[in-house]
Amino acid sequence: MHSRLVILLGLIKYAWATRDRDLLDWCTRAYLFVKEKMSSPFGWVPESLDKGTDPGVSNLVYPLRDETCGISDMMQIAAFLADHGRPEERFTVGRYGANQLFAHQLIDFTPFARLIGDNTGRVDTPQTSYRNMPERCLGAFTAGTYPNELTVDLRSFGGPEHHIDAAGCCGPAGIKALCVLWREAVQRKQDSLHINLWVSLENDDVSVRCEEPVAGQLHVQVKQPCEELVVHVPDYIKDAAELAVDRKYVLKERELHLGRMRGGENVTVTYPLVERTNVEWIAGEEFQVRWRGGRVVGVWPPAKGCATYWWRQCQPPR
Ligand SMILES: [Zn+2]
Image (tube, rainbow, N blue to C red; front, side):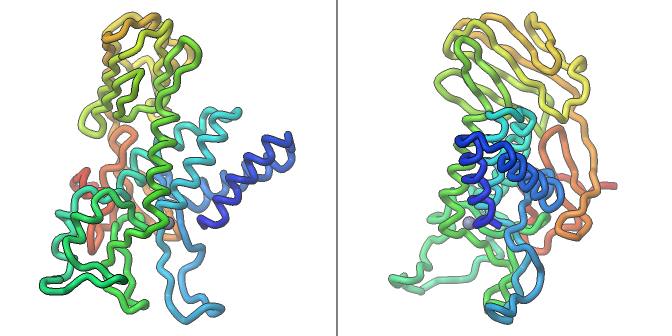
């Protein structure tokens, strides 16, 4: 999938640069097909298209997994479309970023401890490293998960049943996706500052803290003055009238216009954090996906190796 999506991203940019409307429409339809028919709403993007063997290559069984590369491609396409006439696609960047992209980054090996083999006494070679691998892989991005499972089954390749796959391609792809998420989340347009996506981040202009999935609160501290602070209400909040804001604002469609802000001023938005369990068909299989606001907190059936969203632990749906 990655090899196709990265070409699609290039084609979209080419179509825009050459004002080729037909090509742009075709590319947009291809992107929407991958998003709506093949991927999950939280950003699981299939890497291989079919389960089963690839007789042209070998008799190995290729597991239907995703890769950070594909997530990153989709986020880059969504961001380009959002910045060129389809602003609603910015929410795709936020939903993929705050869920499956974050899940892919290896920042804590605690749940994998029982899956990591004993390498005591083994010596690193030019081809293979054994020592302190968890510590040396911190921050890497995985190159294979199932919708409910962070490890992949590589038994048909002679590997383990629960394999943590941190590939060289997915590390830089993950960093690029984080960069896209940060760039789309907060944008300064002339004198106005826009909070487009509700994710925690800090840059020269602003410090944003989103309390999801623990609480329905967004804290914004403006660092550099602006003539107008605009907070865009995410698509998962159905009624913008349910928001409580601790300073004067004007609601224009789904934007909170908060007027002039001085450096150091704060605003907090409080809202009901809606919980729901959606039944989703992903890659031909049924999953129950538990959401709290815009964050996935669990996917069922349960994982055998390590749950994708173990770091947002939640009880199974009743
Ligand atoms: Zn990759």
